[in-house]
Length: 477
Length: 137
Image 1: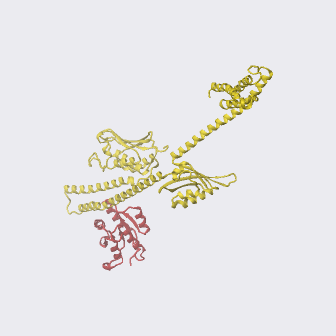
Image 2 (image 1 turned 135 degrees about the vertical axis):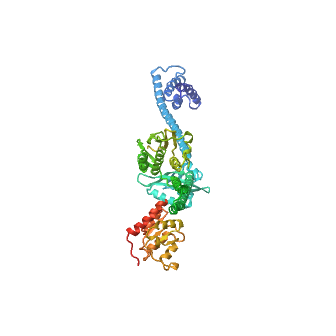
Image 3 (image 1 turned 30 degrees about the vertical axis):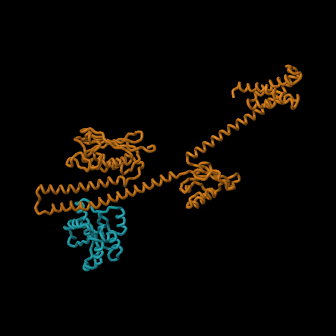
């Protein structure tokens, strides 16, 4: 309340004092002239504070003296008697005013507290509604169960229903009832209480998650429990759906793996027969064969070998997913070393120089990392140019992933083919010039994409190519 | 004795052994039932001679090679005959199980024809010249 207003009230109170005293004249006569001053200054104190109350006291007592104390209608308060009367009255009304002020403060404080409490309560209710979590309290001695609004909503029992522990039990799915009861009794004995169970609401099954802490009084006697109930029906449904999908996927992968294995297996036998008998035929033919017939036989045998390589390649491709492991921290440098060791023969033959910069530790399937490096470096050696192959492997840290690069000085790739080469069975050269099945890069792509990364190439025909691939960074790796 | 259901693999095996000692004494059966009949000299195999060595494929029709292996190695009379498991499978379970059933050795048939021949010849080399076999009664 603004200051001028407070003192305005103080001043306006004075005529009120006078008028009220006049009004009481027929009832109590001229005695106790100050009788209305005190209540009014209390009123002023409660409305406007101590200062205004004192003002009212002073002005009021002067005016009452003027109007009601003989000699009437004379400002004669300047006598010792008069002034002492004013002082006494003012002090008394100040005291009364002070009491009023205290009362006023108490009332204001109480109002503020009530507002804060109401807001708190509202926030709590809103928070519970948003979190789909209700709270409850069980007084074990009196077997009284109290629920928050949200809890009533979750359990579908209207507010106001008298409730006990048995009320709660009755809402539980019959199959889960014993479990919950056992767990609760254990909770009362001190075990942690955190369970998930089903309840039945309007014939529907819901899943809830309960947590509680048990309260004991000062002597250690059991008082009851306070807890929360979270409606996790949606989460359970999602979990079930996810589990279903995961099972389907596992089964599908398994089928695929079996199929691939059996197919490749059973295909080997006729291939062995074809190559074998052609070879025997060649050896056992009575006269040496002419070049043309030798050529035919070579084609057959080469075809068989190629078929075997294709089958192995396809098998490897299909196993990337079905035999893929979960990513784990792997030193890329070590994977590179293993790959390089596997390529020793071609490295020696070609005189290739492998330069590796410092490589990080990344979250990958370590076996597949080796495969990746082996394929990329193998290609770099295979598609070399006239000069001695020089292959540089590096990694640079990006915002969300590590970007690896395998750079060579080989024959390069025309820009129009840079996307195509990652497809299955795509080759850019005839078999005579460069051997290969066209599966290697498709395998690299599958491995990289399985880890959530990307692979691409930048190249200049005649100058060399750099193959880039990314592996997502997780955690602080 | 060769227990092998694939005619082409059988022919190749016999070709590989043609130059060696076994060639004339190699008996070939095509499934597990015939294999046991032969070894037990049942029916038309009444006059069969006891083999010095058995090369056994695992995937056979009727009675499968794994069953044959088990029966062989639990038969008091027959368990002393060395059994070489020669099969296309390279599954870990098959390998482990074969050795658990007391196969004398396990060989995965090479995919490549030339290697196949080498392997077969080395089997002959090892088991018939290096190794000492029990005398047959």
